[in-house]
Amino acid sequence: MIKYILPLAIMLTTNLSGQVAQNFVVTDYNNVEHDLYDDYLNQGKTVAIKIFFTYCPPCQAQAPLYEDKYQSWGAGQYDVEFFELSNKTNDSNSAVSNFAATYGTTMPAAGNQGGSVDAISQFTSGTFGTYYGAPTYIVIAPSGEVIWDVGLSGLDDAISQTGANGMGSSPPPSNYTLNITDRHNVSLAYGNSQVFMKSNSDANYSLNITPFISNGTFTYPSDDIPEVLNPTLSVLNTEQQISGVSAIDLLQIQKHLLNIQPFESPYQLLAADANSSSSITALDLLEIRKVLLNILPTYPLKPVYNFYFPDCANCQEYSLPFTEGTEYTIRVVRVTTGDIH
Picture 1 (cartoon, rainbow, N blue to C red):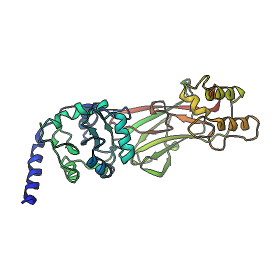
Picture 2 (picture 1 turned 90 degrees about the vertical axis):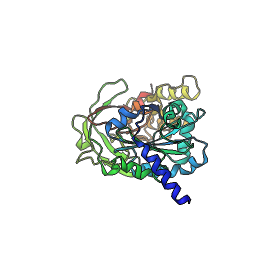
Picture 3 (picture 1 turned 120 degrees about the vertical axis):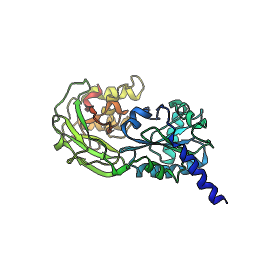
Protein backbone atom coordinates (compact mmCIF):
# COMPACT_ATOMS: atom_id res chain seq x y z
CA MET A 1 0.00 0.00 0.00
CA ILE A 2 2.82 2.41 0.84
CA LYS A 3 4.25 1.98 -2.62
CA TYR A 4 1.17 3.71 -4.07
CA ILE A 5 0.76 6.41 -1.44
CA LEU A 6 4.24 7.91 -1.84
CA PRO A 7 4.04 8.63 -5.61
CA LEU A 8 0.58 10.14 -5.06
CA ALA A 9 1.95 12.50 -2.42
CA ILE A 10 4.74 13.61 -4.74
CA MET A 11 2.24 14.20 -7.54
CA LEU A 12 0.02 16.32 -5.30
CA THR A 13 2.86 18.53 -4.09
CA THR A 14 4.17 18.96 -7.61
CA ASN A 15 0.77 20.24 -8.70
CA LEU A 16 1.24 23.16 -6.29
CA SER A 17 4.07 24.48 -8.45
CA GLY A 18 1.79 27.06 -10.08
CA GLN A 19 2.15 29.25 -6.99
CA VAL A 20 4.76 31.96 -7.29
CA ALA A 21 7.54 32.64 -4.80
CA GLN A 22 7.87 36.02 -3.18
CA ASN A 23 11.18 37.79 -3.62
CA PHE A 24 13.81 37.57 -0.89
CA VAL A 25 17.36 38.79 -0.33
CA VAL A 26 19.94 36.86 1.69
CA THR A 27 23.58 37.53 2.52
CA ASP A 28 25.70 34.39 2.45
CA TYR A 29 28.58 33.54 4.79
CA ASN A 30 31.02 35.12 2.30
CA ASN A 31 29.10 38.39 2.75
CA VAL A 32 27.70 38.23 -0.80
CA GLU A 33 24.12 39.46 -1.22
CA HIS A 34 21.69 37.41 -3.33
CA ASP A 35 18.39 38.77 -4.66
CA LEU A 36 16.14 35.90 -5.78
CA TYR A 37 14.57 37.70 -8.71
CA ASP A 38 17.12 40.33 -9.77
CA ASP A 39 20.15 38.04 -9.57
CA TYR A 40 18.62 34.74 -10.69
CA LEU A 41 15.03 34.32 -11.84
CA ASN A 42 15.00 37.49 -13.95
CA GLN A 43 18.26 36.28 -15.53
CA GLY A 44 16.56 33.06 -16.66
CA LYS A 45 18.07 30.92 -13.90
CA THR A 46 16.40 28.14 -11.96
CA VAL A 47 16.97 28.17 -8.20
CA ALA A 48 17.20 25.07 -5.98
CA ILE A 49 16.95 25.56 -2.22
CA LYS A 50 17.79 23.16 0.57
CA ILE A 51 16.12 24.19 3.83
CA PHE A 52 18.38 22.83 6.56
CA PHE A 53 20.08 23.56 9.85
CA THR A 54 23.68 22.92 10.77
CA TYR A 55 23.11 20.35 13.55
CA CYS A 56 20.50 18.33 11.63
CA PRO A 57 21.88 14.76 11.13
CA PRO A 58 20.01 14.08 7.84
CA CYS A 59 21.15 17.49 6.53
CA GLN A 60 24.72 16.57 7.35
CA ALA A 61 24.45 13.15 5.76
CA GLN A 62 22.92 14.53 2.55
CA ALA A 63 25.28 17.50 2.24
CA PRO A 64 27.88 15.72 0.03
CA LEU A 65 25.09 14.39 -2.22
CA TYR A 66 23.60 17.88 -2.55
CA GLU A 67 27.08 19.19 -3.43
CA ASP A 68 27.39 16.51 -6.13
CA LYS A 69 24.16 17.73 -7.72
CA TYR A 70 25.34 21.33 -7.45
CA GLN A 71 28.49 20.44 -9.36
CA SER A 72 26.62 18.37 -11.95
CA TRP A 73 24.37 21.35 -12.74
CA GLY A 74 27.35 23.64 -13.26
CA ALA A 75 28.04 25.02 -9.77
CA GLY A 76 26.07 28.19 -10.41
CA GLN A 77 27.92 29.15 -13.58
CA TYR A 78 25.13 28.31 -16.00
CA ASP A 79 21.35 28.46 -15.67
CA VAL A 80 20.89 26.84 -12.24
CA GLU A 81 21.87 28.13 -8.79
CA PHE A 82 21.75 26.17 -5.55
CA PHE A 83 21.32 27.50 -2.00
CA GLU A 84 21.44 26.17 1.54
CA LEU A 85 19.27 28.29 3.87
CA SER A 86 18.98 27.56 7.57
CA ASN A 87 15.60 27.54 9.29
CA LYS A 88 17.05 28.10 12.77
CA THR A 89 17.41 31.49 14.45
CA ASN A 90 20.50 30.26 16.32
CA ASP A 91 22.35 29.33 13.12
CA SER A 92 24.74 32.22 12.43
CA ASN A 93 26.52 32.73 9.14
CA SER A 94 29.68 31.61 10.90
CA ALA A 95 28.00 28.33 11.89
CA VAL A 96 26.84 27.83 8.31
CA SER A 97 30.37 28.53 7.08
CA ASN A 98 31.72 25.87 9.45
CA PHE A 99 29.06 23.45 8.20
CA ALA A 100 30.14 24.07 4.61
CA ALA A 101 33.80 23.53 5.47
CA THR A 102 33.04 20.35 7.43
CA TYR A 103 30.73 18.70 4.89
CA GLY A 104 32.27 20.05 1.69
CA THR A 105 29.45 22.20 0.33
CA THR A 106 30.36 25.18 -1.85
CA MET A 107 27.04 26.67 -2.96
CA PRO A 108 25.85 29.98 -1.48
CA ALA A 109 24.53 29.41 2.04
CA ALA A 110 23.22 31.60 4.81
CA GLY A 111 22.06 31.48 8.41
CA ASN A 112 19.63 33.68 10.27
CA GLN A 113 22.30 36.38 10.44
CA GLY A 114 22.15 36.54 6.65
CA GLY A 115 18.35 36.62 6.53
CA SER A 116 17.68 32.93 5.86
CA VAL A 117 14.82 32.48 8.33
CA ASP A 118 12.90 35.44 6.95
CA ALA A 119 13.63 34.38 3.37
CA ILE A 120 12.23 30.87 3.76
CA SER A 121 9.31 31.78 6.01
CA GLN A 122 7.03 31.72 2.96
CA PHE A 123 7.98 28.07 2.45
CA THR A 124 7.96 26.93 6.09
CA SER A 125 4.56 28.55 6.71
CA GLY A 126 2.73 25.93 4.63
CA THR A 127 1.84 28.28 1.78
CA PHE A 128 3.15 25.87 -0.86
CA GLY A 129 2.38 22.61 0.91
CA THR A 130 2.85 20.85 4.21
CA TYR A 131 6.23 21.59 5.72
CA TYR A 132 7.69 18.59 7.54
CA GLY A 133 11.01 20.11 8.58
CA ALA A 134 14.62 19.92 7.47
CA PRO A 135 15.94 18.90 5.08
CA THR A 136 13.38 20.12 2.55
CA TYR A 137 14.26 20.64 -1.10
CA ILE A 138 12.38 23.04 -3.36
CA VAL A 139 12.90 24.29 -6.90
CA ILE A 140 11.89 27.70 -8.24
CA ALA A 141 11.52 28.17 -12.00
CA PRO A 142 12.56 31.43 -13.73
CA SER A 143 8.85 32.31 -13.82
CA GLY A 144 8.84 32.22 -10.01
CA GLU A 145 6.70 29.07 -9.89
CA VAL A 146 7.58 26.78 -6.99
CA ILE A 147 7.95 23.01 -7.18
CA TRP A 148 7.50 22.05 -3.56
CA ASP A 149 9.29 19.45 -1.46
CA VAL A 150 10.81 17.41 -4.27
CA GLY A 151 13.27 15.54 -2.05
CA LEU A 152 16.92 15.05 -2.84
CA SER A 153 16.14 12.17 -5.22
CA GLY A 154 13.63 14.26 -7.16
CA LEU A 155 15.80 17.34 -7.46
CA ASP A 156 17.18 16.60 -10.93
CA ASP A 157 13.77 15.95 -12.44
CA ALA A 158 12.29 19.06 -10.85
CA ILE A 159 15.10 21.24 -12.19
CA SER A 160 14.71 19.74 -15.65
CA GLN A 161 10.96 20.55 -15.54
CA THR A 162 11.86 24.25 -15.44
CA GLY A 163 13.70 23.97 -18.76
CA ALA A 164 17.17 24.35 -17.27
CA ASN A 165 20.08 22.75 -19.13
CA GLY A 166 22.83 23.21 -16.56
CA MET A 167 26.23 22.60 -18.09
CA GLY A 168 24.56 22.08 -21.47
CA SER A 169 23.98 25.82 -21.62
CA SER A 170 26.59 28.53 -21.97
CA PRO A 171 26.90 31.47 -19.61
CA PRO A 172 26.52 34.80 -21.41
CA PRO A 173 29.89 36.34 -22.31
CA SER A 174 30.95 39.31 -20.26
CA ASN A 175 33.68 41.89 -20.74
CA TYR A 176 36.31 42.24 -18.03
CA THR A 177 38.89 44.99 -17.63
CA LEU A 178 41.90 44.40 -15.40
CA ASN A 179 43.15 47.71 -14.06
CA ILE A 180 46.61 47.03 -12.61
CA THR A 181 47.65 49.74 -10.16
CA ASP A 182 50.11 50.35 -7.38
CA ARG A 183 48.80 50.65 -3.83
CA HIS A 184 48.24 54.36 -4.38
CA ASN A 185 45.77 53.57 -7.21
CA VAL A 186 48.16 54.76 -9.93
CA SER A 187 47.68 52.66 -13.08
CA LEU A 188 50.66 50.61 -14.24
CA ALA A 189 51.58 49.15 -17.60
CA TYR A 190 51.19 45.39 -17.87
CA GLY A 191 54.94 44.97 -18.37
CA ASN A 192 55.86 41.44 -17.42
CA SER A 193 52.49 40.71 -15.86
CA GLN A 194 50.93 37.43 -16.88
CA VAL A 195 47.21 36.72 -16.36
CA PHE A 196 46.00 33.14 -15.99
CA MET A 197 42.51 31.66 -16.07
CA LYS A 198 42.23 28.86 -13.53
CA SER A 199 39.44 26.74 -12.08
CA ASN A 200 38.46 26.19 -8.47
CA SER A 201 37.12 22.81 -9.56
CA ASP A 202 40.24 21.64 -11.40
CA ALA A 203 43.56 22.35 -9.73
CA ASN A 204 45.44 21.29 -12.89
CA TYR A 205 43.73 23.78 -15.21
CA SER A 206 45.70 26.94 -16.02
CA LEU A 207 45.45 28.97 -19.23
CA ASN A 208 47.63 32.01 -19.91
CA ILE A 209 45.11 34.51 -21.28
CA THR A 210 47.56 37.43 -21.53
CA PRO A 211 47.74 37.22 -25.37
CA PHE A 212 43.94 37.64 -25.52
CA ILE A 213 43.84 40.81 -23.40
CA SER A 214 43.67 44.07 -25.34
CA ASN A 215 44.08 47.34 -23.46
CA GLY A 216 43.42 45.46 -20.27
CA THR A 217 40.10 44.04 -21.53
CA PHE A 218 39.08 40.49 -22.41
CA THR A 219 35.84 38.62 -23.10
CA TYR A 220 34.91 35.44 -21.27
CA PRO A 221 33.84 32.92 -22.38
CA SER A 222 35.14 33.23 -25.93
CA ASP A 223 36.79 31.13 -28.62
CA ASP A 224 40.20 32.01 -27.17
CA ILE A 225 39.18 31.65 -23.53
CA PRO A 226 36.83 28.66 -23.27
CA GLU A 227 34.46 28.36 -20.35
CA VAL A 228 35.55 26.35 -17.32
CA LEU A 229 33.84 25.39 -14.10
CA ASN A 230 34.29 27.95 -11.29
CA PRO A 231 36.72 30.20 -13.20
CA THR A 232 39.23 32.33 -11.34
CA LEU A 233 41.88 34.85 -12.35
CA SER A 234 45.46 34.79 -11.17
CA VAL A 235 48.05 37.45 -11.99
CA LEU A 236 51.78 36.74 -11.88
CA ASN A 237 54.94 38.67 -12.69
CA THR A 238 58.07 37.11 -14.16
CA GLU A 239 60.38 40.06 -13.47
CA GLN A 240 63.24 39.23 -11.10
CA GLN A 241 64.27 42.52 -9.57
CA ILE A 242 64.27 43.68 -5.96
CA SER A 243 63.73 47.39 -5.56
CA GLY A 244 62.77 49.67 -2.70
CA VAL A 245 63.81 47.21 0.02
CA SER A 246 65.85 48.69 2.87
CA ALA A 247 66.70 48.34 6.55
CA ILE A 248 63.58 50.39 7.25
CA ASP A 249 61.50 47.42 6.16
CA LEU A 250 63.28 45.20 8.69
CA LEU A 251 62.54 47.72 11.44
CA GLN A 252 58.87 47.87 10.44
CA ILE A 253 58.57 44.08 10.60
CA GLN A 254 60.24 44.01 14.02
CA LYS A 255 57.74 46.59 15.30
CA HIS A 256 54.93 44.47 13.89
CA LEU A 257 56.22 41.27 15.53
CA LEU A 258 56.63 43.05 18.89
CA ASN A 259 53.15 44.52 18.56
CA ILE A 260 54.60 48.02 18.86
CA GLN A 261 53.21 49.12 15.51
CA PRO A 262 51.24 46.26 13.93
CA PHE A 263 50.58 46.30 10.21
CA GLU A 264 47.07 47.47 9.37
CA SER A 265 47.30 47.56 5.60
CA PRO A 266 46.76 44.29 3.70
CA TYR A 267 49.45 45.50 1.30
CA GLN A 268 51.99 45.61 4.13
CA LEU A 269 51.03 42.12 5.27
CA LEU A 270 51.40 40.77 1.76
CA ALA A 271 54.68 42.63 1.14
CA ALA A 272 56.27 41.50 4.40
CA ASP A 273 55.48 37.82 3.86
CA ALA A 274 58.83 37.12 2.22
CA ASN A 275 58.57 33.33 2.45
CA SER A 276 54.90 33.08 1.33
CA SER A 277 53.80 31.40 4.56
CA SER A 278 50.67 33.55 4.87
CA SER A 279 51.98 34.91 8.17
CA ILE A 280 54.68 37.33 9.34
CA THR A 281 57.46 35.72 11.41
CA ALA A 282 61.17 36.07 12.13
CA LEU A 283 61.80 33.85 9.11
CA ASP A 284 60.62 36.70 6.88
CA LEU A 285 63.22 38.95 8.47
CA LEU A 286 65.87 36.36 7.65
CA GLU A 287 64.81 36.15 3.98
CA ILE A 288 64.84 39.94 3.57
CA ARG A 289 68.28 40.23 5.25
CA LYS A 290 69.69 37.69 2.79
CA VAL A 291 68.45 39.78 -0.11
CA LEU A 292 69.77 43.04 1.38
CA LEU A 293 73.21 41.43 1.90
CA ASN A 294 73.19 40.01 -1.66
CA ILE A 295 73.36 36.48 -0.31
CA LEU A 296 70.24 35.79 -2.38
CA PRO A 297 69.25 37.66 -5.56
CA THR A 298 65.54 37.28 -4.75
CA TYR A 299 63.17 35.38 -2.52
CA PRO A 300 63.17 31.65 -3.32
CA LEU A 301 59.54 31.07 -2.28
CA LYS A 302 57.91 34.36 -3.21
CA PRO A 303 57.48 36.26 -6.47
CA VAL A 304 59.00 39.73 -6.49
CA TYR A 305 55.60 41.20 -7.27
CA ASN A 306 52.42 40.00 -5.66
CA PHE A 307 48.99 40.95 -6.94
CA TYR A 308 46.09 41.67 -4.66
CA PHE A 309 42.38 41.92 -5.51
CA PRO A 310 41.05 44.51 -3.04
CA ASP A 311 37.42 43.36 -3.31
CA CYS A 312 38.32 39.72 -2.72
CA ALA A 313 39.27 39.63 0.98
CA ASN A 314 43.05 39.60 0.46
CA CYS A 315 43.02 36.78 -2.06
CA GLN A 316 45.44 36.54 -4.96
CA GLU A 317 42.93 34.69 -7.12
CA TYR A 318 39.60 36.18 -8.12
CA SER A 319 36.39 34.30 -8.90
CA LEU A 320 34.75 35.76 -11.99
CA PRO A 321 31.20 37.09 -11.67
CA PHE A 322 28.64 36.66 -14.46
CA THR A 323 25.67 38.84 -15.37
CA GLU A 324 24.42 39.09 -18.94
CA GLY A 325 25.32 42.35 -20.68
CA THR A 326 27.55 43.53 -17.85
CA GLU A 327 31.08 44.94 -18.03
CA TYR A 328 33.33 44.47 -15.03
CA THR A 329 36.34 46.51 -14.02
CA ILE A 330 38.61 44.59 -11.66
CA ARG A 331 41.33 46.46 -9.84
CA VAL A 332 44.49 44.46 -9.27
CA VAL A 333 47.10 45.99 -6.97
CA ARG A 334 50.77 45.20 -7.52
CA VAL A 335 52.61 44.88 -4.20
CA THR A 336 56.40 44.82 -3.79
CA THR A 337 58.52 44.23 -0.73
CA GLY A 338 59.23 47.95 -0.72
CA ASP A 339 55.57 48.52 0.14
CA ILE A 340 56.24 47.46 3.72
CA HIS A 341 57.03 51.07 4.63
